[in-house]
Image (cartoon, rainbow, N blue to C red; front, side):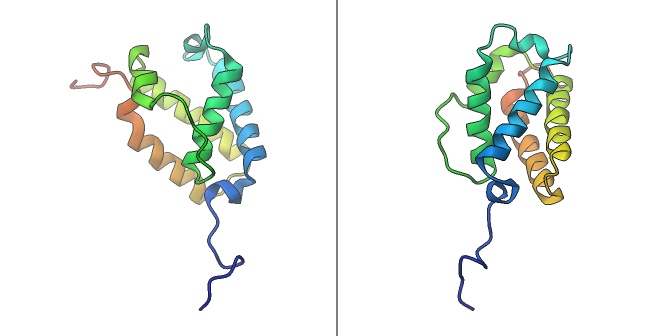
Length: 132
């Protein structure tokens, strides 16, 4: 079988609609996060335009789109913030709810959930996990 453009598997990024869909997801996600008193305080002194741009670039990479992310790595950006497992789960829930609301396919949702599980230790502050 010859692989053609029609038979080449597309990335999650392409399947959800590319840059416009990622931007819509990031905007809706941060609307949810900033309305949640449990986690909104982390963004009080944050330049949200830049924050949205960073998340869009990171989410693009995670979903298999072009890598234009130039921000700090996850641990460097998040460890000093003292994020707990519960807060991480809350934010992850907001991301999942956002993607679900936007009609993202189930396999992409599962993929994002796997990535969230893989990076949790980089985001949740050392000492805030049970047994740490």
